[in-house]
Length: 153
Image (tube, rainbow, N blue to C red; front, side, top):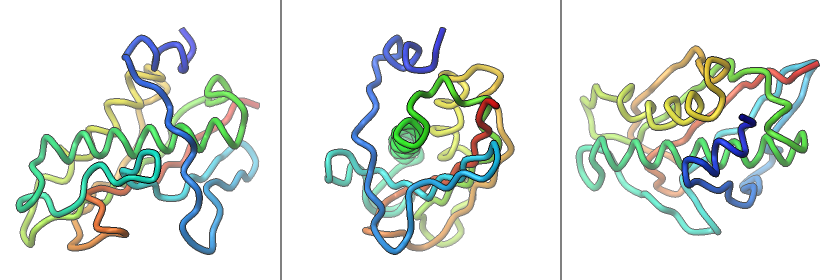
């Protein structure tokens, strides 16, 4: 099953690709690698999750925020290359979690993004990863996700 059909089966739709919020572009391709700028949990110009995990957000709500970030990343990938069928694999994910001091459960939060990539791409969605807690992210977002994807030749 192709990735976009898999998204539909999951009851998910890709949002409009988020525009860059600064002096950068959403994606850069070099060879067969597509580097995706960090995406936050914004849909149709509205933040879906703001605040820190351990304060305004829980691990569960933050994991949902990470899934929204992953959907935004997939929208940027599709905009860059025309179809998610062109993705050979997700190579690397970096997840940032806006959290209270001492928060140690960033991996559980970023699983929201990682699990979506595996659901959409199967084995090709399994990736290396970093999950980092921080005390602030752009626009007060709860999560930001960066991705490196390999494209089919």
